Amino acid sequence: MKLTTRGHYSVKAMLDLSLQPTLASVKLIAQRQNLPAPYLEKLLIQLRRAGLVESVRGSKGGYRLAKAPGQIYLGQILDAVGEPITPLETTNLEKAEDWVTLTLWRRLQEKLREVLYKISLEELYFDARSWQAAQGENTNFMV
Image 1 (cartoon, rainbow, N blue to C red):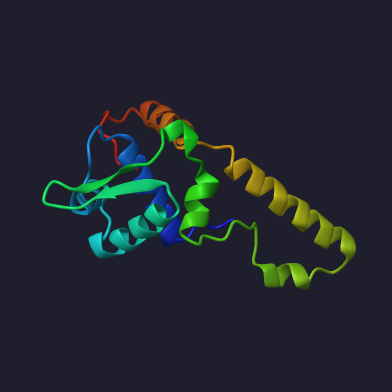
Image 2: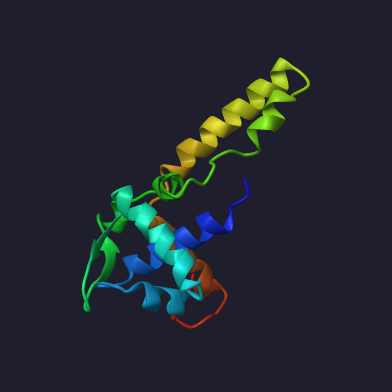
């Protein structure tokens, strides 16, 4: 599975929001995660429509998670922004040489989807922190 820019940026933004105790503006998230703000705003709108983030308008407005990080799953984030959750393109499945290969790829696709819907934002955060600690990096968190 290849994660597109859309999927990657969405996960980064959601992880960033999981670390914020208050509302976070698009501008601040973009600065912290080194993302283009206009593109990020479009992604956050899609995530809001999916019920994963909430937005507050106004000069002190911004975004926050709509649920606890342990209740938001990677599969939900990727689905919300239209990220395909497939090990390879569907057109390749149609070109499978035989039913065994086709069945194998379909089963892998099912399992991949299951796994992505079991990995929470909270787990992803702790995995990233563990990796960061193993690398000997400081505690500043940039996904």
